[in-house]
Length: 134
Image 1 (tube, one colour):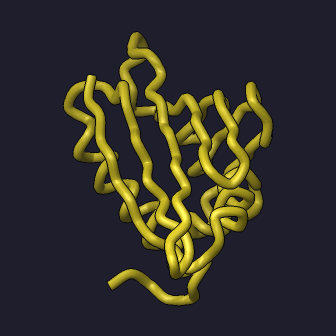
Image 2: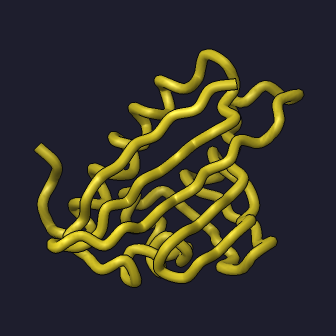
C-alpha cells in the first residue's frame, strides 16, 4: 500500500472550504462539473467524478478535518478502501488544505498525487478565486 500527501492554499475561510467539500452541488462545481453526491454526516456516503470515486465519511471536525474512505473504479476488487484525511489549516490569506491519502493500492500513488492537483486543486482555485493555477 502507498501513501501520499498533497497541499494547496485557497483564498477562502476554512468554514467555506469545509462546507463546499461536503456539499454535492458545490463539490461538483469546484471540480469542473463532474457530478458529486455527498451525505454530509459521519457514516454518510459520497461519490465524485460521475461515480469514479466513492466511499463513506468516517470523521467530521467542523471547519478543521474531514476523514473519508475513498476508492476509485481503478482499485483492484480485492483491495481495501483507501483513507483520505483533509486537514483545513487557517493561513493569513485563507486556508491551506492538506490531503493525507493512505492505503492506496501499490503502483497508484503517483497517479493520485497528480490527480489531486489536476482534478481538484486547479479547478478549486478557479471556483473559489476566479483564477487558474499557473
